[in-house]
Image (cartoon, rainbow, N blue to C red; front, top):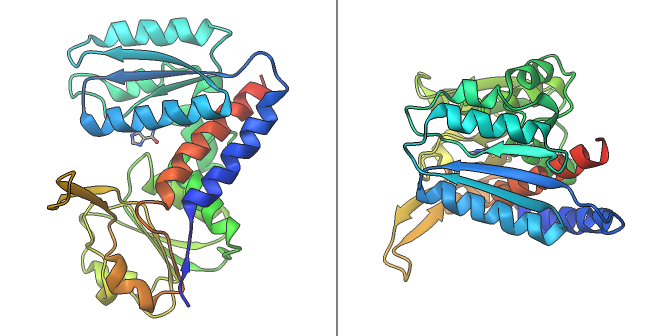
Amino acid sequence: MTIILDGKKLSNNIKEELKDKLEKYEKKPGLAIILVGNKPDSEIYVRMKKKACKYVGISNFDFHYNKDTKEEIIIDKIKELNKDDNINGILVQLPLPQHLNKDKILNSIKIEKDIDGFHEANVGKLTLNKFSVCPCTPTGVIKLLDNYNIELKGKNIVVIGKSNIVGLPLSLLLLHREATVTICHSNTIDLSNITKNADILISACGQPEMINSNYIKDNIIIIDIGINRINCDNKKGYKIVGDVDYNDVFNKVNAISPVPGGVGPMTIAMLLENCVNNFLNF
Ligand code: GUN
């Protein structure tokens, strides 16, 4: 029987634990969220993050700038937040508009307040397995796998996607757990030939339902990180699907994370956990 890796349930449990942990503190953790522009997906993600923060008792400080805002304005705000004792974490929602230098902005965050682990110094620590913070989606994937006691050591794990936010840090975490990791990306030749070797296949390629049963061997584990919006004639006019053709692979796999309800909620739970850890270690 195929196991559904239920990220929604696990994230709800984590949220309850964090809420309980914070109850005894009068002063609450503070998370600053910087959003530049009006990208609908980013606005939705930020709204979801804020709602989850409120639920567990993390105070939100919102900084929403219009899409033409100058880099210096944002960096000055980050410098101010770096010094503010009420702020334990600073999050800059990505992607940023083209004219902004993403690296410069992310690297202006004080490393102790870098809640996403995107600062170059934190990336370096992750590479050397000396990290104290790690990007939320990769951490959420590992938590989800651990929750179902899925062994990583010695497994052939294929990661599709090499982004700084997901594929790259996730591959490092898996490597640190002694997995044999293969990273594929948009220039990979003969992808299905590689994915067919996977004991665990993790996709973050952003191609709706691209991975079907022809890409996998029997009895593997699939983690689907994709969140893709496709047109559909329901009330909303669209639906959210993953990178994996869920129905096509379902009977061929041992376990799979659904979309929605898999990695997405785990990402938010890990943001909350990073925030609370920062607050408690301050
Ligand atoms: N955009 C997409 N995913 C993320 C994330 O995990 N953190 C931030 N800050 N922006 C994102």
